[in-house]
Image (cartoon, rainbow, N blue to C red; front, side):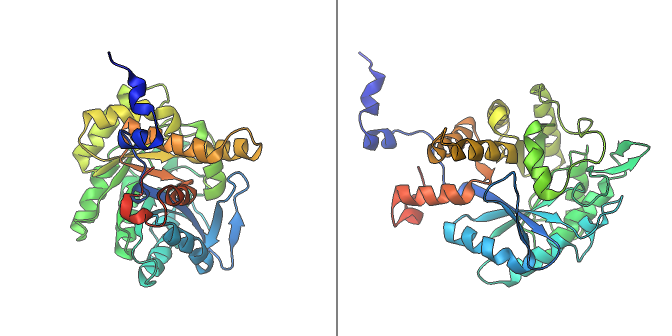
Length: 335
């Protein structure tokens, strides 16, 4: 007679038959870099997260390296904005400066740098594309996104991650990278990016809230699942090498469908609002933060995610170290 409980009798046995694991090398940590000097500014709505100027960024990157997290996702906050987002593709822009500095610093040069490509942090109106008469212009924005991507690649970025959600931008960026000699730079496309209310704290951190209206004309309707697969398929055909589903908590079904339908690495983006809710509940003593976070990250992996972008990355890496002991790096970094 079958009894499923037989394989749950002890932690050792449960560990041996466990189907999904979270590994440190699959975590990507978002970092906010701001123009200026001497800046380490806490983000009020995201406990433990700060904006750093380049001269103080090493404080955060030291923690990343010590935790064994292999990759960072960079977001830039420029010293000035304009209606065409010129700070994004300025060869001396904040991300370009940051990437060049990181690649020159021996202790950070091994970190895999993912550069987010979007105009929203750099435009005076806060939208992800150019605007005319209140309309976000799709095709007119594409050359600027491509210019930004090439600029980041030229600075030394390892992965280009377009998050703007303009139609056809993956193909335009791929062609621009190839034509400029960056054939081997992969594109991590925000393909299934929903117009979500979970982004609020990020917009504070990145100074990227839209000055008018919302982003529902270019980000996806949260009610649509099949449409997400169309977006993913188009981006793959245009040259995407990896796919992001964002947010992650309320969209694990989307992660699952993408992983089932396409043979491509899927990245779950555990976004700011999800992070802040857990931090707030943990601060009140209502939940066990470690257990909740690790259960959540495991859920992302179970749904089909190959990698996870998360603000919990450094803490999760520490918990994984505790779980696996002193030789945690040698044993798969698993929990």
